Image 1 (tube, each protein chain N blue to C red):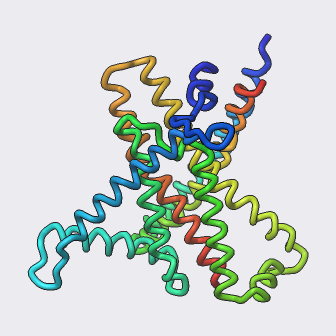
Image 2 (cartoon, rainbow over the protein chains, first blue to last red; image 1 turned 60 degrees about the vertical axis):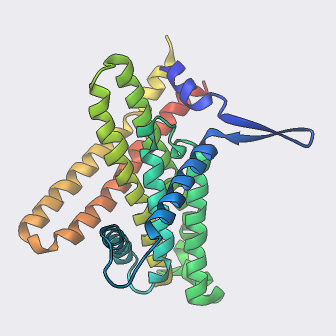
Length: 227
Length: 72
């Protein structure tokens, strides 16, 4: 068990050593996998959005439009009308996290299994939440909102600034790591067929659910901040 | 005797709380859908949120168990 965990967590995560100054500038595997995901998404976007028309649309465009409208509608209903301007960011994060969680299907290590990636995502979320609060209420209103229900629990609200990103980051990281550990254990016990069925649950279903939960919580916080 | 394994096992007890919490939430959600089938979209959303929050405790336990195994 300890060897497995060591292999998953403690191994050298560096993929590319770039000489930089006196030492090396290390690029982690998670960063490279993120680049691959970004490249795939960008190529998909360029291919799908080329040749868009207003009349006589192709089947590709119809499918694209219904997918975009569905995603925007799902996220927009979570955000509510007041925060609708943040829909596109949340949709982008949703697509990115869902693809990162499912990239294990193609034999890559999911980038979300690296604590640095999930930490960065959750810090982006909390900065956006607080910025949304400042933009809507102004700095004074934002500061006042810390003493909202009553002044006595202001320190709890300040503590939440730390707890929210921590729990967002740990939830995503722990889920993906747990799924990978269970998959590795299953592979060592029954190498044939059984891991494939398990991968259907852990890679596809759990990955999608975790991406949804991350975006759902972020939009809930934004909705709460702009109220 | 190796006490680290016992420590990790105790950390895994957080799963009990998460299981009870998710079970309660799901049973109430089923009740609510049975009473008001037209509100199932809203109920589903709240159920997912509740499950995610309840499950987080189990995940914390898991992360702590891993830390105990690795850094002892």
